[in-house]
Amino acid sequence: MAAFAVDLGSFYYRGSQLQSASDLASLAGAEMQSQGASEAEIRDTVNDVLESNGVDLGTVDADILLFADQDEVQVSLNDKDVSLYLSSFL
Image 1: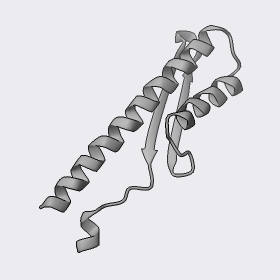
Image 2 (image 1 turned 30 degrees about the vertical axis):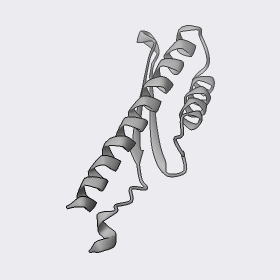
Image 3 (image 1 turned 90 degrees about the vertical axis):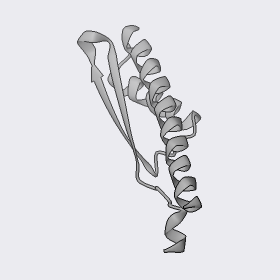
């Protein structure tokens, strides 16, 4: 039961980290988009912000969607490297 609690807490913490990084990257990208930056510059900035906030783009898929008419940038993250403490006991 304790291992399950550790896993659950770990999932919540990791999800919170990824959400915060995604939010910051989206805001940075939208700011650049509102200033007329190119798509490549926006994507580079979003990736830089993600990495500077602890997101390893080697183990996390980042989907970046740009909506030019709305100055909106959406960043979706999918962590491919999820380790489970409980699985070491099974």
